[in-house]
Length: 406
Image (tube, rainbow, N blue to C red):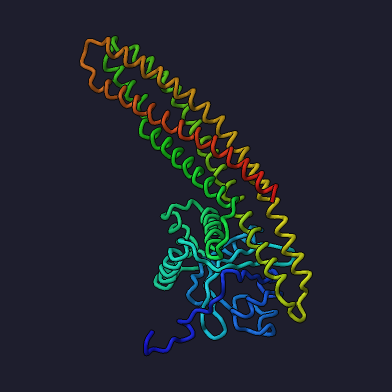
């Protein structure tokens, strides 16, 4: 700013979008290797970095809850991605999207410069969470729980979903900044993510619609009793509906599980693929640099390449799992269509028998109309789900072919 000196803590330590980099630690988070970009941006000499805790570069603006999630994933043998603000030796800061992965003897972390539309939202979220930590004296675990609640309010069902979408968008944004063509695999996953969201929304609609109509059989039975002899047929219809409703409840429960399986498989495969992509970019950039004195360059490259191959293979397996889950989901959808057809038959029977009654049956007509709306809602959701399933299967198969050809 004009006439004002920018202090170290207010100054960004810049690095380029092409400068992806890594560091490796042991199981306790002690730095054992790294890339020259890491050393340059952090402004520490290698002698100051090696065998030191990685938290040496931790910025005080980072909420503790983020690191709680980081270590929770890693200790369970799972890779994790997160936005991280680091502090250089002179107090300046730099942001990265970091992907940390378990490896033999410790962990490997690759980083890229964040720039997607998610990044500023995360910055605001971290400021909110940090203030919450300070004001309410939150533990790291409680802070992590608040972060997950916040992400859920933004539409992310889990941290796994959030980090998978975030890393894809950061990779795509990086390609744009480097003026590279869009990665066809990432574009495929963008479509798959949208279709998975459609499945989730339609499954939620089914559950909501069922809950809104779960007492229709009981209300039909009440109306049957009130009508006496005239209501016997309505009583039979009520019993039939009770049976169909029980089938539907069981099928909707299976639907929710199947939808979640598809969702998880897609986002897991997407995260693994993006991780392998960033690691490959790190390896390519690493090869262009001069070897650091005392660093086992060949060993670091072998570690990177090993993980690249591992995560590419796992991503391919994950995509095949998506197809399996979509096939199972489609079978569930067909069974649900049969149940919906039974529901329509029951509704028509109820409509016909209601028309034969001589007493006023306003409440009964309303119940039959509710059944019509319920059946229409189910049918509409099933059509959308079937279409999404077919598109998802085709796109997943195309993604597998693209991955195998790479």
